[in-house]
Length: 89
Image (cartoon, rainbow, N blue to C red; front, side, top):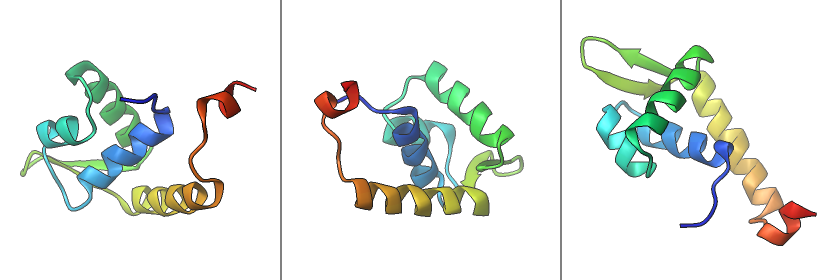
């Protein structure tokens, strides 16, 4: 698998949590270890991009998270995929 930035991983987590899902599903869909997942879930919930629904034991992308996804996808479409050699310069 190629290198992914923290922003790419965040985007994958928010996409998989859209509509509500469990930690396990997020972990598998974003290709993360459990330790990585815990770190990301903590940061994303603290920043209001994800919310935890206690009764259902699910994480759900918030309106702020959906806005982040929209902006991220728009920026990705404009910039296009970057090569590793372009990043290092």
